Amino acid sequence: MHPGPYALAAVGRSPFRRDNLIGESFFVGSTIWRNGMMVKNKFVIGAIGILAAAAVVLAGCNSQSKGSSAASTSSTASQQKTLKILVSAEIPQLDSAKSYDVVSDSQIFNFQEGLYKLGKKDAVVPAIAQSQPTVSKDGLTYTIKLKKDAAWSNGAPVTAQDFVFAWRRAVDPKTKSQNATKLFSLANAEEINAGKKPLTDLGVKAVGDDTLQVKLAIANPYFLRELTGTNYFPQNGKFVNKVGAKYGTAAQYVLADGPFIIKDWNGTSDKWSFVKNPHYYDAKQVKLTKVDVSVVTNAATQAQTFDQKTADITPVSGEFIEKYAKDPAYHRISSYGTSNVEIDTTSEGHPELGNVNFRRALFYAVDRKALTDQVLKDGSVPAVGYLAPGALRNPANGKDVNTELGTLTYYSKAKARKYLALAKKELGKDKFTLTLKGSDTDAGKRTTEYLQSTFQNALPGVTVDVQNIPAKSLFASLMSYNFQLDTGGWEAEADPSVLLQQFTTGYTHDHGGFSNKQYDQLVKDAQGKDAANAQQRYTDLKDAQKILLDQAVVVPLYHSATNLLINTQLKGVQTHAFGQTYDFSRAYFK
Image: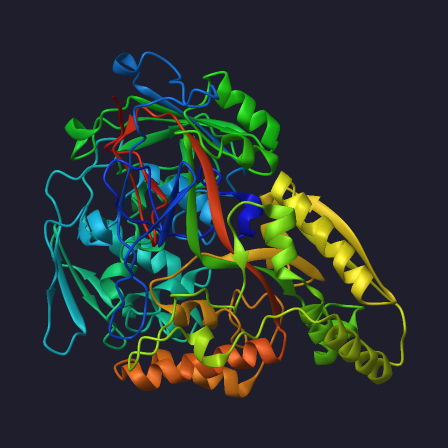
């Protein structure tokens, strides 16, 4: 779970991934805004209806705006080797085996690599792997050769056993990884995580130092893309065992096999750095010597820091979007994820949240258009479903799932009050007090204030108290499985079934405790017996989303947009639709 646009994880982005390539424009998404102009890009739809957006090169234009200082460079570009960026959230942790939030992921990607990574047009390209895998005819066995010059930042070679160690550790129930399910594509992973089989039964083995053999539970057309994720990254067993429980808790307790090494992060730092890794196999191509990162949550401070030329990339929000809208340094990126209100349906002392009619009252009380147009004003669009437009399409006709279901997330105060009246009758209670938590960023505060107002105005007898807290605390609240209302959102995934899986019974990230046998079966079928049947899989997922919205398990708010100011001399940064947010390994200043 990711705290929506409120914990703008990497350079202020919402926790949703996307992009495209348009010449020298900055980047990305199905819709790119540049200097106030909207440019449409193509969707590439796979056999089972997923959106595969293109990869992007982040490159600012060279001209400067006459009306603003924002486009100014932060130093003499030709001499600049340090990139300075602002982010809106602190790092929760840096253990790749445990990572489940976009804030942690965005930083881990800077100092670690797995077998594969995303390249241009989101193509999966070799990283630690030498080449594309050899796949058996039945699609169950992958054989992967490793680069012989891949090394850790302490000089030790990256070996096949490092992957075996890391993957076993990730699914080991003793590790308590909140994202162990990401590895359930591997044979026996689910049974091992449930404590029913030994770690040695996991479908991965080292054949010498430089060959990895992987066996899957079922053929998975998304597996190669899954291998680009942080949970599949290697770990040096000798180092991990040496530092023990401290692994991932501070900069000195991680090893790097990627382009940079993290420095100056002690577990709670609001500033840290990445320095060039001399042991990286492609170190000659890394132009930057350092990336300085600072956490700044105040929108005015972010803009001021950029104007003062002490930041090269910063989020921009609120009234500052209008100020910089025509500046060459300003860029808006549309997303394919959704920000929501999460509801704990089993919250202790709040039986109303387990009542479907009360949840429906909350669901229909939100005027999503007012939220996006009058409150956020950042290019976000009202949610039309839990799955964002383009995330799931009918393979027979190309229509979006939300179009075929009909817009289910509309605003109706009359419906909201009708369902509230039913809930009051069923619960035998007229007054309710709830706590709504959100991020402590400016956007987070505006969102929770709006929701507080709209819930209280639309729903007589409902009082909402607001708490705005750091992203790290918001993650902890969700994972406590004992909250009331929390704001958050899931990043876009290559496979939309992963997003719907979050609400299956007993799933690690079923934060609200929702349980529905029909829903569970639909998601299970989509990921299992119907995985190779594109049309039936689409129907399974469409029906699952319908149940999710009908039961008002989650209140979709909007499909996000990210707004940034970027030094116009910065070139060569890649960003991607899925997985890695920003890749600075080829970045440079012109």
